[in-house]
Image 1: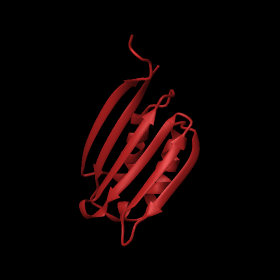
Image 2: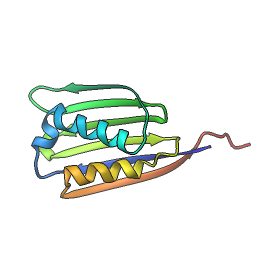
Image 3: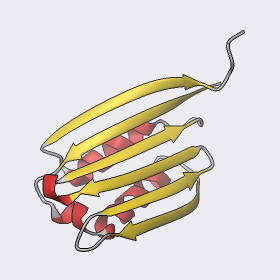
Amino acid sequence: MTYRHMLLELWVEDRSLVERVEPIRSMILEGAATVGMNIIYEHFHQFSPHGMTGVMVLAESHVTVHTWVEQGLAVVDVISCGAEDPADLAAYLEERLRPIARQISVQSRSVEREA
């Protein structure tokens, strides 16, 4: 079995999008549900004075997010072993966050041990 691991680094001009838990929490939850990911658990934490971190445990694996407001940066890590493609969630988030710059890395991983 193989699974996909995607790391998105998204720099946004509107830093209010990454300053607080909302609206990014809603974007990630809606995006995951829209692309067919099955959310088991979610927890998001607000830092003071700003910035946030969050995790969603999925039936297919997980999604995490961390923000650095000073840079206007959101880092989203998505792993999926299901039919759901992390690229679909990435496209959903990019459409809403409208990044001015981005860096994406994708890894195909295997859970089978080589002999």
